[in-house]
Length: 201
Image (cartoon, rainbow, N blue to C red):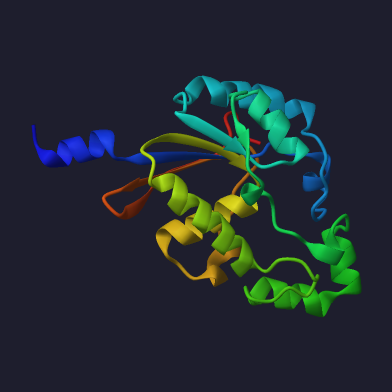
């Protein structure tokens, strides 16, 4: 049997990233609100669960929406703080419209400079580093990993794995309950799939 086949079969780590389901605050473009998912997301999550392969190990971020999303996908997931959403500092609990009205310069800086934190919280570079470090650790353990977290954490994972500039962070439009599949084998990361929610959103 070719060595390459054995390497692919037994030494690959596959990551199924699921963006947590939509919440009321998410729909209204609020920053960092920890609220529960909308009831209408449940059928979509149930269909997604039917289409997914059972993971070797599962993880989720600590927020309420990730708890509820995980409940409908695979209850056997471990909470890991490193998968939490970006810390928005002073913007937490405020809407995008409010930030546009009260801190337009700060918002512009944040959108265009990954190393800036005008809100006093984390930078996009900070998020990329912590998610990337977790990915590298998990990639050393072959199997299938389920990770349920915010779209921002998944964007950070994509930047890390594809080795692209953090300035492209906002170009990934990841919808609630979408699926992003990555794999790691023989020292290389690959993007395998980007899927929209089942039945749309």
